[in-house]
Figure (spheres, rainbow, N blue to C red):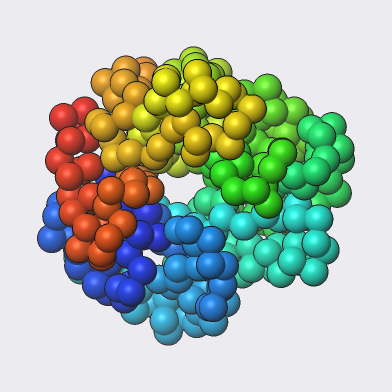
Length: 304
């Protein structure tokens, strides 16, 4: 397994600076944030270290050469919008950029993008499955034809009032994974596995690794701390951030020994990327970089 991080927390750094930082700290890969220029302002979104929409063969060659010189690989091109947004104009824009990411992934010889499947927050699961059937088959076919894998993260995107009650991502539970995989039965469509989202949903974050081992394309390392006293006060129907908080690996409730052990059980040899969303490390870019260094130091006790 190769250890790296998602670059969304490095806002204000150039691509070369991010690669240099990774190399200097012995990190082997980067999940590169590729939002459209001037894109989303959501927390941890809108960051773009590669302009996928305007990537040329010349620029791609430079990026590949620079990464090779520094010994840092690109694990995937990352863009996490809501491709099932009820606003059809927004939806079309998000999907258009996904196609550009697929093309850029081919040009860079990365051959993977990481994203969300999306969800209309006001519709139930069955209604959203119909949307998946309408929207996603052409995207998956396009990726198949170009040899690109799509890894869907299991984040519910259920943190702000506008995302209530259903969230903005349908692929949040093993039950929903099975339903979506029936619709999108493709070797190029799989999972970007983040155990932290299962913790606060009270879902076993180890067992699905075994069931879906052939669908795990990419892995995140992020922790979650659930505050029992807050949960007891507001209940599971509250907005999740009322009773939990994202933390650096080792500072929350994920048992990383068991998690990495399960990854080795299933023979996972892919990319594993630290995702920093810990508010204690948001005061400055230096804090964000420190968060990556601390996380990597902790995880090296387990990652092989």
